[in-house]
Length: 80
Picture 1: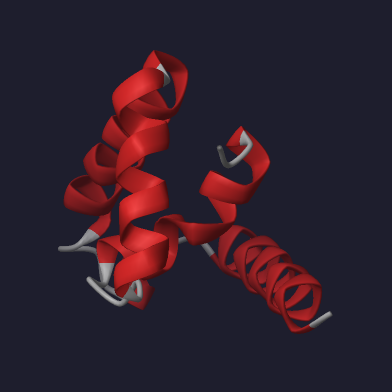
Picture 2: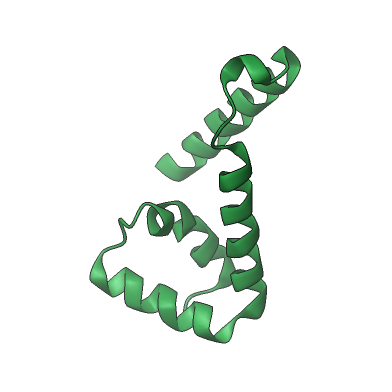
């Protein structure tokens, strides 16, 4: 069974409906047995809904800078 850390790494692809069939099955098995991961996924979906309507102009410049730095770090980690 996949670890929670591995599942978190798959969340973006899952939400984009881009998991390969084998990964999707492993993801589904884990989620069926892990309430904390289900809660995390639910909170991620809620965050997506809440931020969908935001425009860049709505986000303060310092928050934009912090968010960009965070996303760049996350992208570097995924490439490793």
